[in-house]
Length: 66
Image 1: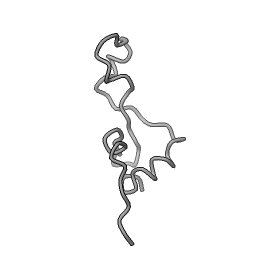
Image 2: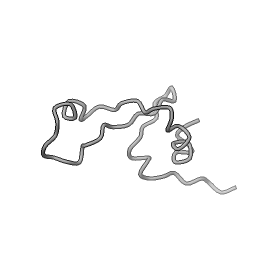
Image 3: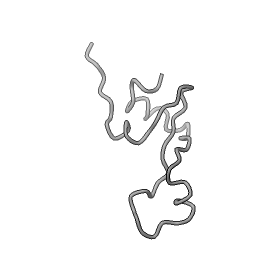
Image 4: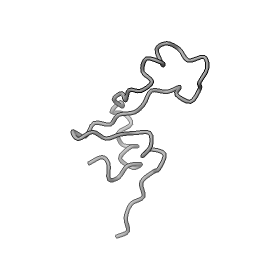
């Protein structure tokens, strides 16, 4: 069977930890001006993704989630 393709956008936006948890960055990073203080505080941090998106991430990252 051929290899499954990884979705390149998902590969850049999500990170899978060693325990299998999926992390994502907070939204609003691309807009330099008018950033809220809440977004600025979370700018460099990765936050856990909700479990409702797990099926979509399994399709997008076939080798990252097992």
